[in-house]
Length: 198
Image 1 (tube, rainbow, N blue to C red):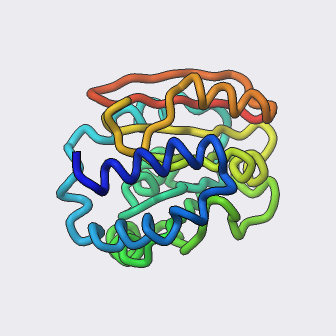
Image 2 (image 1 turned 120 degrees about the vertical axis):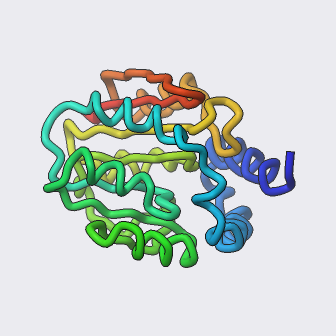
C-alpha cells in the first residue's frame, strides 16, 4: 500500500468521525491530487464506475440540477450528464489540476473549485449530489440537497478503495440527518449507496 493510499484511508476515517479535523488533511490531499491529475484517468479500470452507474440508474424523480463532489477529472459529472442530458451538472473539486483536465474532457458540465466541507452553493440547490471515492461531508450534502433529492456515494473497489466509508456508517450519518429510502448496489468490484432527503 503506497503512502498516498494509506494517507487517503487515514484522512477518510478521521474526517468522517471528526469533520472539524479536515483542515489538518486538506492541503496534503489537495497536493496529492494535483500531483496525480495527469495520470489519474490511466489509473482507473474500465469498470471503476459500474456501481456508480447502477446506483444512478435507480435514482427516482426528475433531476434538473446535479452536483458531483470530488469530481476529479470529471468522470462522475460525465456519467451524470449521460443519464440526465438536460440537467445542469456541476463538478466540484479542491484540485485545480484535476479540474483543468475535467474542463477539457466534459465541456457540457460546469466545474468549480470548492471545498466539500463548506460548499459555495445555496441551501436546497440540487436534486442529486454524487460522490465517487470521495470523503463525504454529511451536513453540507444535507444542506445543498433539495427535499426529495438523492445523495449517492460510490466506491470503485468497495472496501479496498483508499477513500472508503462503510455502508453502515453512511446509513447512520444520513439517518441522523433525516435521510430515508436507503438502497445499496454492487457491480464489478465496486459498491454504492443512495439515500433520499426527506
